[in-house]
Amino acid sequence: MSRRRVAITGLGLVSPFGDSLADFFQRILSGESAVRLLRLDELPRALAIPFVACPGFQASAVLGKALAGTMDRFAQLGTAAAFAAWDDAGLDRRQNAESRERWGVSWGTALGGTLAYEKGYKELWQKGRERISPLSVILGMNNAANAHISIQLGLGGVSMSHTVACASSSIAIGEAFRRVRSGEAPIMLTGGSDVPQAYGVARAWDALRVLASGDEKTAPVACRPFSEDRDGLVLGEGGAALVLEDWEHAHRRGARIHGELIGYGSTCDHAHLVRPEADGQIRALRAALDDAALNPSDVDYINAHGTATIEGDPVEVEAIRAVFGDGGTRPAVSGTKSMHGHLLGAAGAIEAIVTILSLREQAIPPTAHLDTIDPACAGVDHVSVTRRDQPLSTALSNSFAFGGSNAVLAFRAASQ
Image 1: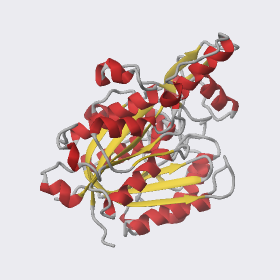
Image 2 (image 1 turned 30 degrees about the vertical axis):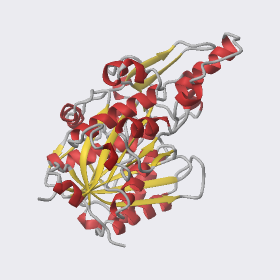
Image 3 (image 1 turned 90 degrees about the horizontal axis):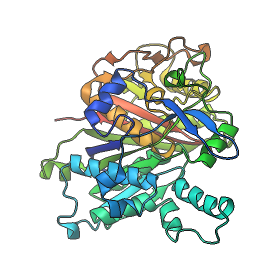
Image 4 (image 1 turned 180 degrees about the vertical axis):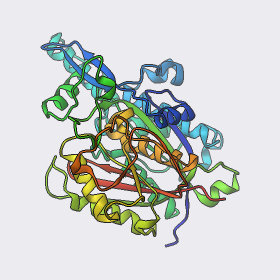
């Protein structure tokens, strides 16, 4: 089977820094944190946690009131990001829909429509009502985002959702990549979205004891990947989308190419539900390199999974060191969750966009707040506190999830 080149022709997002790619990336390069304190004043006990929200997003303004009313917020964020990526790719939203029978959607979400389900539970158990909204199922189902995207853009090919915890959207991107590369689909719209601020979801994560602490003053610096004083991850909401396109198809229509997706590796630790193992991550990194026909020395930058958990960060560094060796100047490593938070099922997609923009702009964002590196996370070339400008040709983006699922995406700067 022939292997087609896969161009990235569209990028779109809904982020705490808005929906402008240029503004989002400049603020990430500058080390700006979007983390703020979120207060959930619910019974039986209020909860306040560092969180990353998208307060400027108004679904009805972007999608129209009628369409937005049929979606949970995770689907609203996802569809808005998908529309932005589609427009960025220079594709018409409905024109020539009959030619799109092989064009598809591959989407990631860890949680689906938890806000819709929680609202229904409150109606039943707090208010004592016998019936809840008949829209609850279609609002809450995990495939709601990709279904709406397919319907609104007239995409008649595969429409699938991937729920693989924090690796959901990276796996969605990887599986879309395989379909374009094999020739099965000339265009795939892919990415992910999640909204983890339902009270029950936030309390569940809090019970795991993996969330960072903070108050109004300290919340912006609460997420400190690889830092000696890190104490946990920061949840966030958002949506991010990419248009993957057969290279020749993109050139025939004169599309702008942001970069090239050249490899994908996915493995399972098969060891523990929540404790990561370096072996599985090592195999995922090597699988992505092999798939992309890269040597370790070819990689200039790794956008790390970097959640700032006590156990997770050293394991990721161990895996990177095992594949790329100790010390040296390549590859550079940074964790941008320190600024945009952990978007769960959307994390891989927003970090893929950061990686692509890093290659395009020849600039590496920092791991913000990384003043003192944990000795257990030493031995790699951390980009700490401030951006780094350097020539970049190839880069990886890591996503490592609960359940032991690992996904690594390999990108190349756009060639002429």
